[in-house]
Length: 424
Image (cartoon, rainbow, N blue to C red; front, top):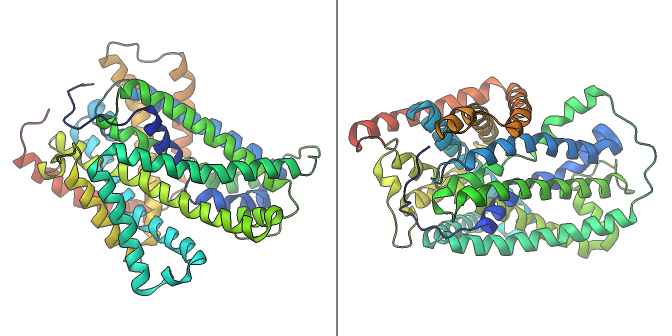
């Protein structure tokens, strides 16, 4: 794989990559998952999350190996493009970007909904639109003026959202009833909820995209990926344990962690967790904006999109692409009937996982390394099987929608091929 001097400023270290990993994984999903998992598999729920984290670790191991082979931005697009050619790389990059753009609009609506529970004024009308524009506009400005500012903001957000959860884990586990003998659930029950559990672990790949703005990415990214997933898995395990062995487990609450906090700290605890949810979604939006907005410049650097997307600002950032992403997210957030399309972001990720894993031995051989080592020999079959199984859980509508975005992107691809400089 090619390594070239980056035209972007490398202002992000391993800690910044770690923040993107953690905030890419922890969004709003885990705050509503504990009751659904407990209802399906009872006190086996914490162990199901632990198993899910270990299975996804196989995919992360493959991505950690891939990040050692390039210092250029693009993540899955870079891996697939370097292994199979420009158009396959474009397909992965463009569909990932399009899906993330839509889900960014969906996620900001989730944030507004949670914020409205605390401040009802922002739940509708001009105040709602103003909040959406303020959030996405603010994220756009921070990304334009430099990724070091993004790292600082993400660091603060991570602290403010992780600390209350750690306190809840400590209090909840300390107060939890003594576990009885573990009862293994029926396989059908596990199969029915496994997809939802595994979806809580997608998003780590966001951190691989801005490699061109990362200091020593071939060292920083593998470490951040492994540490980030391990830390989030343990946190998920602790939260689920605290919930499953509490008196409110199985009560059917729609806000399980808020209810758990209220059980131990009253309305103050519930309000704190509600604020934590808002902060968590905001941090997830920040990480998503930072990673997805770097995908078009990576495509443009290879002549796969018009050069406009790769224009560098005075701060050493791809400003045009960042602004394009911010404006697009605002427009999608104002489209009332688009939320169903957000499901295709998971499908786009799965396609990226599958082709990136297949690309790994090819890229290692081109780097004059053995096609596989013991780590890959163990991890790759598990990672590929898991990704393929998850892909079979999607529906035809999601594939059709993804195909529509691909068709639109392909038109831009051929325009860029005709007008751009020779491909590198």
